[in-house]
Length: 304
Ligand code: HMG
Ligand code: MG
Image (spheres, rainbow, N blue to C red):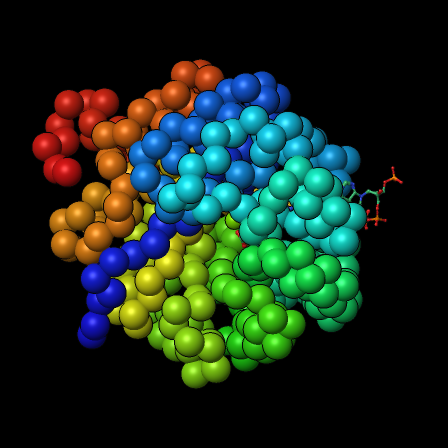
């Protein structure tokens, strides 16, 4: 077992979290949220997406959000892009880091991006060509890496095939998504270990949703394999509109608290992070599901 001494947290709350909120959130509130997150020291923030506003109306203001956020030099800002049209919109908004996304199961991919897995990989060829010509950094997501809300079990070889295909397309990082929180820690060695036979550990991120409360256990299992990049959302915001019943990502606070106790560095200021989550709680008018936020609100948390 060899844990990394530092873990990079990729904060996906403004995109994965807010894409699933039923109410419209004002652009200025999204901008303020991203700024609070960067002030908290999150090294990478997935700010928004440039997908069809008919599919995801909540993020239709991606260009404005990207334009108005404060761009700190020590923070990486990215956006989700499904096709060349989305990439052009992102480039116009000044985006320098994008994430393309496909899945390891056919039915989810069809629901999510209206394409088979192979069609989506073909769609990414011109996206990658243009992105690389513009010097844009690219992440590739493999959704349903640990199970599919429609197809059920997903064989590890499907995940490995898609991860390798994204790698062959030239992505800089691959994030393995547990889209509806199906993963269990005992699966991690087979799926992530299998991908690690083909890609270096420095290129692999993990992205667990916390539907069944297992996300932190799954991260721990991934850390045991040397994983150094973990996706989370502040407060545990979110879900996926095409994975019915899925809840938000692992809460950033809950990961930071665990890593702090394990003496693994993140560079994140927990108090400032909680300020960002509390801000979103005010905007949404409800408590967010992070265990640490809840423990803190009850006055029972002395853990930092
Ligand atoms: P489609 O309907 O097959 O596409 O959608 P189309 O090319 O036929 O275009 C249809 C309309 O959308 C046209 O407009 C296009 O111009 C427009 P119309 O002529 O009808 O007025 N359009 C766009 N508009 C703005 N920006 C664009 C764009 N592209 C087309 N980029 C498409 C295909 C991929 C576009 C659609 O299915 C889509 O946008 N899907 C996005 C779904 C999504 O965002 N899902 C959530 C993110 S994924 C996720 O959460 C999982 C993740 O977190 C990891 C995990 O947890 O596993 C990443
Ligand atoms: Mg997700």
